[in-house]
Length: 167
Image (tube, rainbow, N blue to C red; front, side):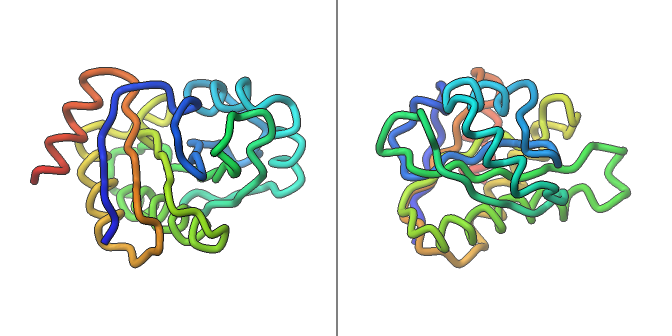
């Protein structure tokens, strides 16, 4: 069974095998958590991501972690849904981001993975709904990943994830 932890912090400083980034389809880097991960990893991350692009919403692809500190060896890029009111399959696409990221982590042999709150920034997904979907998708996905860390960027996001974990 996968152990799920919720923490407040900087995802680029996590002590895990793989970090998931909330990417855009180009995998070249963007704002928010994706920009922070790209800055920490260095320019090789954008070059490697661009070579794998495009990445469809709900899918995930992996690159090396480049300049991120060990033990981080991989960055898993996943593209979340843009929120359009909830009637365009956004929930299923978001759940797929977590499932596919765990599948990719299994392919890489990662035993620990850190996730940000996917699609809750500029993509506008409602954070409380996203937290429930994240926890449910991780719990429902068969995986060899032993430890998942849900990394919140602020106390509000942390509290929503903790509530989802308890529920």
